[in-house]
Image (cartoon, rainbow, N blue to C red; front, side, top):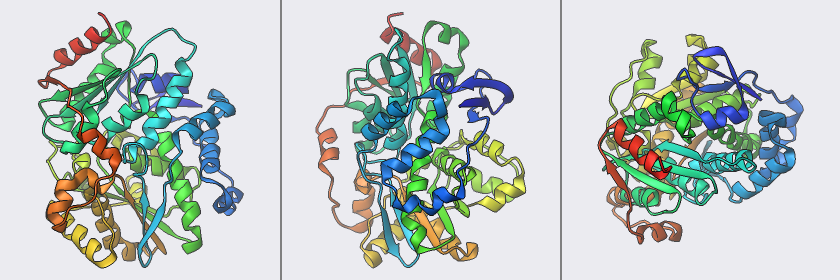
Length: 434
């Protein structure tokens, strides 16, 4: 598997180099030089395959000879021990529940696989890797779970002070050992800017090996394409045309779906569902991409004003009209999100988290217009991770799984910094003994 930078197609690297660098030297994101395509026969019999069999076949297509099949099988068995079920909400609307992993968020899929891939690549190398991840909620905890106590890897989680839910913060700050939580005075966009600067700092990277676990890293996107295939296997008996509504912030999950489509997966449309951070819906309307400061909402993991994966989307669909044909988009306010959470709970006895609720809204509003037989929205996190929002919206007390209660009882340990590059550099140097 070879990959190129979105800012320079002549800059080509191996999978191992792309995984460890995260970001290209020119600031671009990595994409495969060739996207492998499945034969039609694969999709005719995919519904007869076990979940892990599907994932292995997709992983082999992507990774080729970069990792032996025996090692890939081990990684998949270790990471994907949980189910990713499809649930019918009503009529032709289904949800894909991505929150059954160790931290109850969809990012367990990408982070766990990435950790396995990195551990394989460095097992015979005498060096340390420093993973830097910016998070607006669930990414950090998933990365912490995936990389916790992995030899040779230090993890630095940058999160915006006061802008993640209390339970999410506990999931970020209670690990210890090789996991360092860094509380930044600023927004997610500030955290992301610091992470990108660390990755592109050539002088620092000559002293310390730095990589990223955000969706800018291709090792996150490859496994996130897996569950589009497995959900199609579950849904193909319900219809022949499909739309997937993806709650979108940094657009990694949506980009993974676009890659799956490019591999031949017969998804007709994607819907980029956003909150009031509406940079992408505005782009589809105007043709002009205008990043702006993020706005705080109850669907906080989507509070992104300059989505990193926009670059990848432009490379996958360089023609604007073609992009508009394949991807639709709508944005929603917190008030609309609360209303639909309550409505779906009362009508269909299903509890959505705020991010999934935005996905449901966009699917409900677009499905007739698109004329598809099956609509799917992604439930990206367990609703209990947003207990205060859900309790006040539903006038009840939702149950918190024991896996989350364990985090809540632990003390927070975080390193506070200003939105200052020198401060985060100093923290990383101290951990690395420099």
